[in-house]
Length: 199
Image (cartoon, rainbow, N blue to C red; front, side):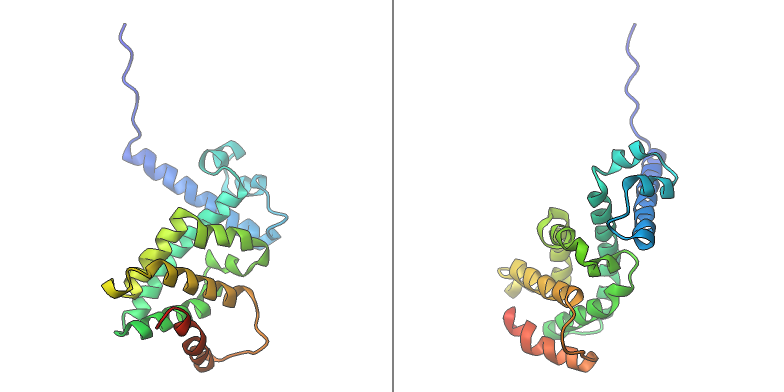
């Protein structure tokens, strides 16, 4: 008797898996908003998503992975908005300044990305934005677009990406002694960030 051929996932199967994964991510954000980082468990996330804990574990190894996935997903969507904004500017200097200003002003209002302002998530932010392969790839691709794939920046692109990302994260995570309006923040970035990345 011959064995039946193994069943391969269909497009419909993949769509269901994608929706379930997204539902888990959305549920995690609801729970974090409701109870905070310390009190949110995978049991809470599963209940909010309407799935079992084993289902959550079939997509994510632990709670930190759920949170990182939410931030990466949000980062991709936010990147599209940011690029739409900076595409009105032509010089690399203006595009970079506008990108940082746009992120500084808008990240706290993004449902997925407002998590970056939670100091308790600092280690996850580091893993997601600076250390993880996926996070670094997203940041690098974004900076390629900001700098319009100009060959003169290719050698230093990774350092430009890292320094700018670290600078932005510090602005979002650490409240400064001085409150700056839009104009003052632009001037601050021109004085402090641009020289640091060689602009």
